Length: 365
Image (cartoon, rainbow, N blue to C red):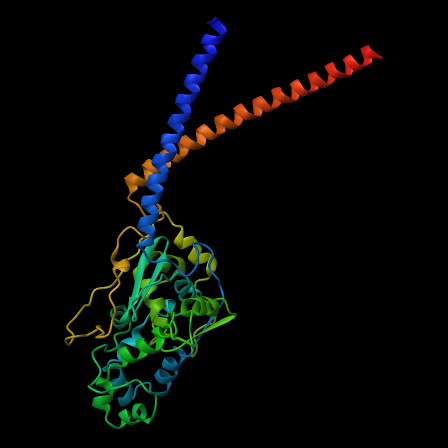
């Protein structure tokens, strides 16, 4: 065997070894990717892809301006004192800067994830989970969220008006549970009904893409929860909580004075973003406060790690996979240079062969 053949054999062996190495590395990453895909299958999906959210307007069938109207009409009266001492009193203490109309509610709705829960809305803000349930609703509004009386059903008719005849019974009514249930029905995909609603999730996504979204109940509570759970939003809003509905100087809150899409995007991409995922029940309440008898269990919601951007794996595993991907990227670039070099050599060879062929033809003539 000649020296050139020996060297060529060694080069071929080394190339085969490198190819086997690349194949093994690719196999390892493929196996890891399969594991990640298995994790994804066991976790809830999102309504919209990250940073691909619609930004339409939200129409609410409730307004805090009514509270300002009641305040002005009953200012200094005995009746106003009764209201302030009742379950509705805390509403007048709500900070104005947390109630200003903006994009907070709409952006939270578009960040929802799929769950089996009937009375829990889960959103993702900056890769971190946030729950909106009857517990959070009761905590931010102060409205009673205990159980309804036996046999009670939510049908809006004269029975609500008749409650006013007995103020003690009126103030003791579970207004928080009633308002929350009205709101959550319009803030989440509804149930699947054969022949009527075959794709509730698709219908809800279509609704969020419309020019305006209709919400019932007291959807401002979702905004209050967002401000409570995400301190960065308060920084974006500016001001402080000293101005409440009770001491606000105007008769109407200013329109479109809340956080806009740019404010929310800036807060969401803040490296120091902190989100409190859920609220605990504070104070003393009756048994079954904030609880639903017909709520569903959803094991996907309980899995940790989903809401991270690191491909739903722990930090160490993510770093290892990133390192391997970078190695593959370096190898691909090296192979690209080799292929380009071989391409240039091939073009030179073609040019040489064309010249040689032309010279041969010219000589024969």
